[in-house]
Amino acid sequence: MTELLSFLAPQILLFIRYRQASQHWNESYEVNLKLFDRHCHDNYPFAASLTQEMVDSWCHQRDTEENNSCRSRIYVIVSFIRFLSDRGLANINEPEIPRKEKRVYIPHAFTDEELSRFFAECDNIPLFDRRKEVLIRKMTLPVFFRFLYSSGIRTYEARHLRKSNVNLEHGILDIAYSKGHDQHYIVLHDSMLAIMRDYDTSIEKIYPDRTYFFPSVRQSYYSQGWLTRNFKLLWYKANTAHATAYEFRHHYAVMNINRWVDQGFGFDDKLLYLSKSMGHTTIESTKYYYSIVPGFAQILQDLTAKGFDWIIPEVSDDEETN
Image 1 (tube, helix red, strand yellow):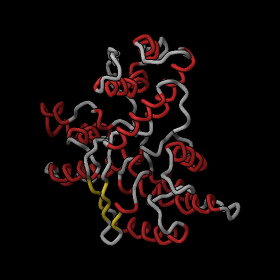
Image 2 (image 1 turned 90 degrees about the horizontal axis):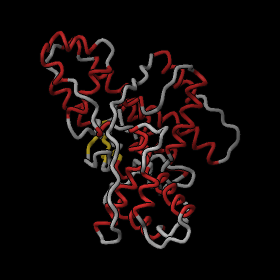
Image 3 (image 1 turned 180 degrees about the horizontal axis):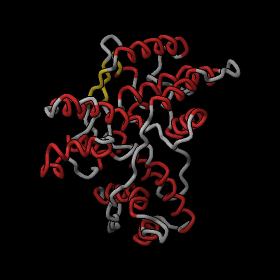
Image 4 (image 1 turned 30 degrees about the vertical axis):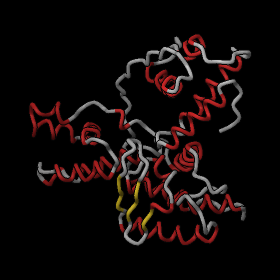
């Protein structure tokens, strides 16, 4: 984390270490912690302790801010306040977190043509020079994006995947830290396993003692910014429709569910397997995808009649983008 400026710096660092140790840290929290630190430094330069005014002035919902945006901005600050209060380090009333609004976003439905063009761009990344970062980028991106596409893994889990959690003999990934903090396993398709083995052999020559399966040039994990930049660059070279790398996860679920349409209505076991593989804490989170499968919602409604509303719940917090 970059340098903190306010009197809260020691307590913020302690909070971060605690969250990391308990496997409840998310790198997206960092930006709002730094902004809150700057807020306290700029507006209360002589303060020595946290006050209600500092918290309320930061956490109040802004006139131009929607509920979900406000929730994202202040959630980590509310957690920080709870951390301090539980340890007798502050006596602050928690600000009210705005009610979550139902999202209306519909993920992009990838076509075969779009995917073919995108992966062709991945396979033809130019090698401008022999610098290590250029070589690693060319090696990593075709494998990384195929990995997202073929496994349904969260982008966060893929970026933070450790080499020690990848069994390339049997093609099994141990996802020890996921969004719900529940361990789950992913079995690679044979074709993806072959690609991962080839990548492992190549990257091992550069980083023989790497920690992360996809190491950056600094031998750390890649940032969300790295993922977003590279996906946009390659995607918009070949396509015009808006899409994000995270939508490979939606696509994975949709394609799996679509395969069950002609196999009768006995898909409970398949749904359970899909739910476990995707790391959902409840099967209801997986059922959400029924509502975004083209044409499938109507089929389910015809087959289930009154049970349709039970099968398609609202999106849960478990499926927040990460």
